[in-house]
Length: 158
Image (cartoon, rainbow, N blue to C red; front, side):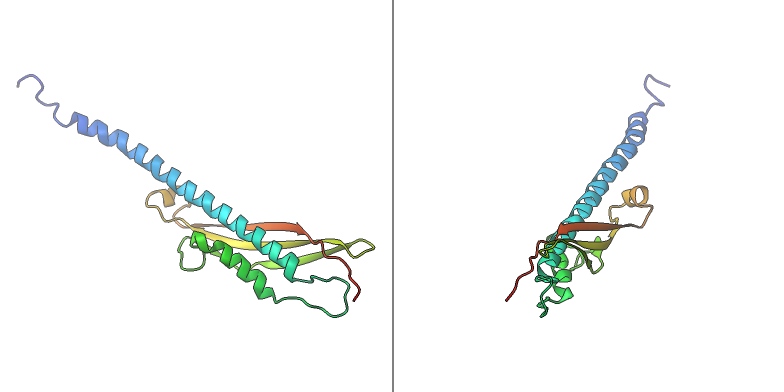
């Protein structure tokens, strides 16, 4: 046996031992960043939807003739807000349910006030190999986002 014999492959073994944790960590960071973007996208959709709710649902409180828009407009606002992120319109990672809009009648003497609230249920499917098992347990994560907006409609007389 000569010098250096029997040590072949030592560098390869060290590389494999160091490479696996580093690549796993990198994939997890990528998965977590995609998850954070998905949460921000759903929060943005909830904010857009609650603004639509404030404008469309009961825009003239206290008036005998209701000029409400359809609830589907509030739902459309959320789905359009998700479109750049690929959510629910052809994307595979983010799926949102139809938002529900409620109006709290906390009116003052002039008919101003109240709070509009929108709640959206979302489901995010982890897609990055290896990291989906570490971050999402091999499946998906679900959460509920709630956004509130003051209803500033006034009581007008025609």
